[in-house]
Image (cartoon, rainbow, N blue to C red):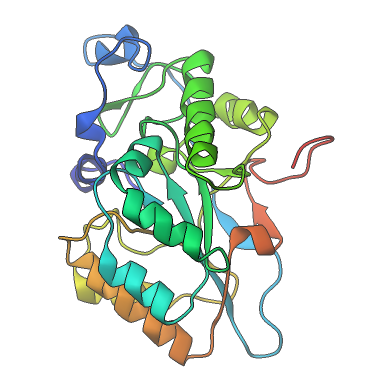
Length: 270
């Protein structure tokens, strides 16, 4: 994602505008960052690929979806279920609380849906107080730990297996926050193909982009914006990929390769 007005709107649509106001989640330094000197921190947006492609001429693709806040896009969900397409869904604690019926659907289809951690409140998992697309980051190691840990607790409390992957809001991190998340026992989920630009693409553009997925791609899209045109394009693209003979896989079922030390095995850790 690029630092732009469009990117800022992406986060607003994901629900960042509704961040809680209690101090433990939004550091004062981050809230005042517009008037303070910004820290010189290099942020990374990790890429993730499948380690092995499909057999022969068959392509293998991992569909991943973020459920930031809001509702569920039934156009996408119904397509995944009807066509029996496995995928990985990254959910926030806030989204889980608001969507019990969809949670029940996920639980009823364990062969299709791998549920992973998108954080507690959809706060960028960066341990330095700074804005990301104008949004306050977690701002400290303690706040990053809370965002990740509370998100994982919510996944387990909802009835799913303990998550092994984390993808933070904005998908941006600094090196020390990646290290902290890894030490908590998680791999950090990047992606190789942005399918819908935060659900802001038109239907045709989203369809074209995702339908062009190549062997080994990890696609990121959003499943929480039922009123956006992009969702129809995502659903259409899934059907096109299936017709092309693509093998769909979940992150839990394959080997992956991520940059910025997001997936490399560590002693005693996943």
